[in-house]
Image 1 (cartoon, rainbow, N blue to C red):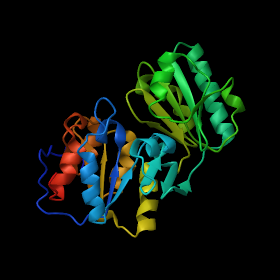
Image 2: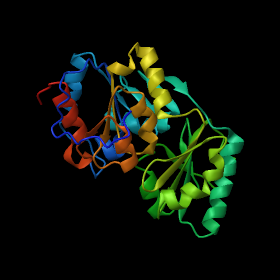
Image 3: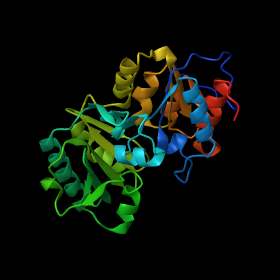
Image 4: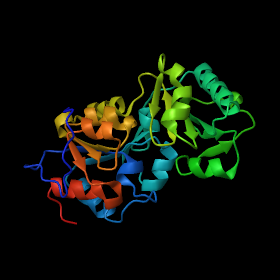
Length: 283
């Protein structure tokens, strides 16, 4: 990938119509607008893509149950939990779990950081559900959009589930607060700043890019036949796994510099407009 900032394409003109067979779509900051909604034009685009045999793959830090509820489809490929859980046609394709002792150590570290003055909320993300022990409405309002299955428990250390990741919401700054507090866990596992307020800790091998490569293998699709859209650091691996990579104009500057192209911002329906233009689809 080029390290020079890519030009913003509005509308995109790739100079050719690529032979795309798989499109991976980050949600927050990319496909969804500022109100976390899908533009109505997405649905006719999806129909036309499917008619061409192109697989659409929502790829998000969100829980699988949340993605399934948002799209109301079982016949899609979903990359959930930032790549830790992949579901195809309603069945698990792959999972990459976090060791339970590690998850509990993270919970303890975040309790210590909170006692030290950081305003944090911790989500332990399992296959069956997501779990929180902080139950005030201010925090739950931030967690609910990402976790359709969310259970409030007395003690996160008692959770018994296959743990896909631990997510931490920092009311101030994910990079300056929770991200730094979680830095020690980045040696054995992966600490990824996934938004202005969210930080995820996952298995060292869990990544949207690794998940996308698994999907490519399962579908018999090459990197050159793959298009991907993202806006933040948790999307970097996915963008690198796609021959046609698009960072959003509203994305982090470092991510924009890594992508092959820059698409119009999520507030301007950039993903749908870019796909339609690149593949010569009329909506």
